[in-house]
Image (tube, rainbow, N blue to C red):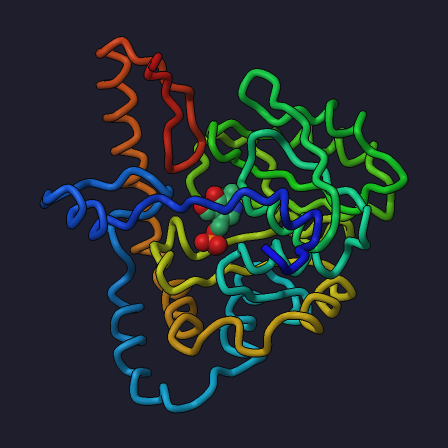
Length: 312
Ligand SMILES: Cc1ncc(COP(=O)(O)O)c(C=O)c1O
């Protein structure tokens, strides 16, 4: 190509999302395909979401509320924080990118497990930062390995809890110990996309005591337990000074009107949320038992997905 692209961006491998169901059905002339990729929620979403979205369709000639006032207030109320501690995104993917752009200068480092959710690496490279990968130990985040890789260039650490793709967790005790070894000027991004599915009480949950440590940025999403992946809504809860930076650089209309309405309605339906979690657990337990009976090794999971060894 005659146009010169950034050296960092040249090294990016594109994110390959799981194929949409309809595309698989079309391509292979199939029907009733069950999609297990992308950790989606097959149950659907709350009927309250459907009603709220239908009612608000008539206002789609207007731009969205750029402050996402109602959504930020609903999240703030749920977690006992102020709206100024919240940043909403077009999925939590969006907030990952905002963090990288807001806090990395060229050459700064962001630590992350290897393998991990590809958007961390893509966002860091897009922001001209350097991703520093720390291989897992025993299919779990290697917290000691991360500590060893901290340097004066480290600005961000990405932690996923529960971990994608293995379903492992970081316990409260282990995280507390880890935190003590992190310098004061490093932001620890705790991505809790799957936290609603945890069944183990010892799991670290950053919103049990929100904003306890100004270095911690919590990421949450409506895509999984709430079943709103297609709407694209995620949010971060963080120190107000960090939120102010992200809000400065985010696109003013990054969360569209229907997505805002859908997320507010979803937060208002605990019955659906509990059903969604219960049905997911039942499905996981069924699959785990049946796969194990077939001689296929599955890792125990605290998420809505299973990692299994097909010995291919
Ligand atoms: C660990 C992790 N973080 C973030 C996301 C992105 O979620 P969202 O749909 O909110 O962008 C995913 C999606 O699969 C994920 O697995």
